[in-house]
Length: 64
Image (tube, one colour):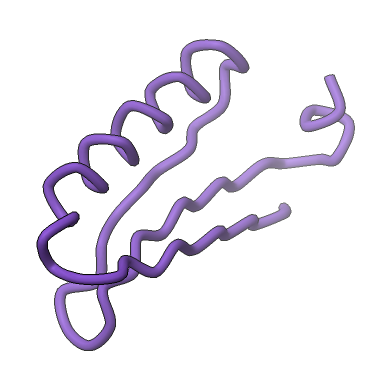
């Protein structure tokens, strides 16, 4: 099993609502277009980071 993670750090709290909307939209697009199970979430404490996570069984599935 392979686990991919991508992270984006927000500049300030003012952009948080737009960033969450973008993250959800991007995740939906990835899942719908490529048939994957990508998830997104935001850290509750510390830095304002948004994370995307994808778990896939094989690299062949990812290449397809």
